[in-house]
Length: 117
View (cartoon, helix red, strand yellow):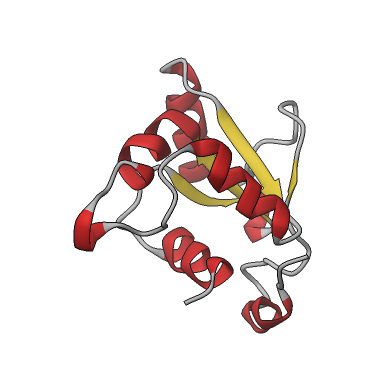
């Protein structure tokens, strides 16, 4: 699978607590510290991505057209997402928001058009 497909599967999965849909499925929210441990820290057959550090992961996001949203970006409208964000923020974790118009929960068919720059 290409990077966008792997990312989609992660965001859709209940297996990962460090990454989820935000803003009605238009942005990807990432709890940076938990993501480093839960995803990038995996080895062997459980490894999701080839990279092991956050800078490399963010470079991949940028290469596929994702842009970082400002920290004061609107909070999630749904209660579970809002509570997850609040819990993460209160644990002194930084939540990163990334947006790509072709990576949208309501339009999975657009994923095919999400290509590397």
